[in-house]
Image: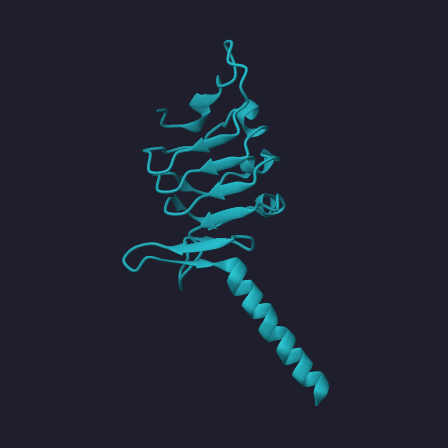
Length: 146
């Protein structure tokens, strides 16, 4: 298994006519996303790099994964803000370490936010956002009734 995703650029070549739709590196010693092969990015629908040793900023190159539906970045060592270009993909699932008083990443579009050790926890943001919207709607309704 390669340490860097760019070492996968020959997938789909040399007689292999299959299309790469799913890459799952969960709990693999993967360290870098440098120069991800564009032939892989254009067809990718699912990417899991959770529990890896990847660090630094979440690569903006991931936004070129126009078919991507699920992205799992949790329990890696990413820092900073999830690129807005990634949020624009309207992913079905985006899991990231964006929970807690000092989250490792900030994200406006995560579907599930994680917090790691020493007190691991995760929150489904879809449910949290629905609850918040219901409360806001009820408060607005009360104000109108006054």
